[in-house]
Image (cartoon, rainbow, N blue to C red; front, side, top):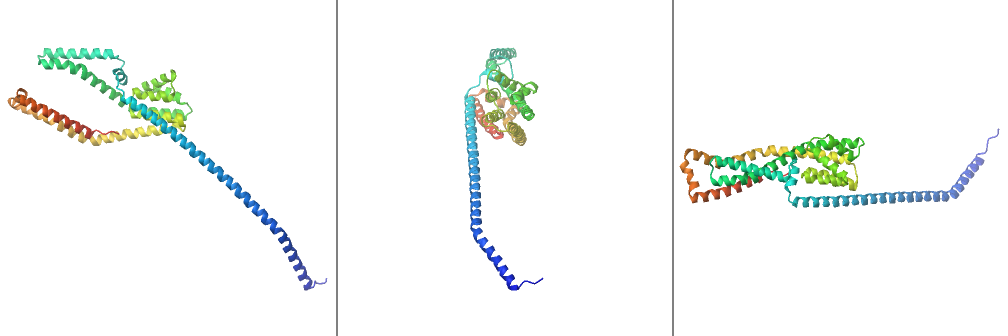
Length: 335
């Protein structure tokens, strides 16, 4: 075989390079055009995606703004309704309902009058002074029964607060298991403990006469005027207006109510020393007066027989009342 001449090989190599350069020169413009077109398409697609994202974000902001406005309007409406209810003077029938009593106002007045007359008869038999005999029916017939009624209302409200978070937990578990809110409320109304069962039974009865769940829960605050009940009504009303995870909202409410109860117990424990001091300071003048009367009756009787003693006791009573009122406000905390 004959070897190729180096000159021929160089010429062939140069021809191949020249052909490649010519091809690249013709194809370069086309490749650059395609590359620019691809970049432009990519930029347009990314711009479209950005516009879609911006639009979605704007829609989410608008939706959140609408929900926030709806929640604010609902809260304002509930607050206005609660203020109107607070301004209304509770009737005796409402107070008897809050105490869980089935007694009618007429019977309550009759029992109060009988109680006052009985105590007046006892005071008359004990040969008490005329002013005491005439004053006992007023105090025993008007003041004492209403004080007992207020005590019963407070005790029932405390029992309700002890059981209310457990009832909310039952509602949360029922909703998570697939039951609707109405059935969860009926479950509490049938299986709960008093007085929670009675209050939720009123909610169920209100639904049966045509009220919605938020309105029926809002009416619960009329029979049980507590902030915790108002919170529950607000949660139900907001969920019905704006939507959301109801079980999570009610679960958070139950947790808040338990933490609130713990805080009240902690504040009560920390304020017991101040309350004991206030009781001792308030009772000290009466104890000293009783001891002085037991040791020297004549020394104390001048306060009851002399007009100047009456004036001194009147002024002392006013100052004692002011001091007791100030100490009471100092040791009572609102949570």
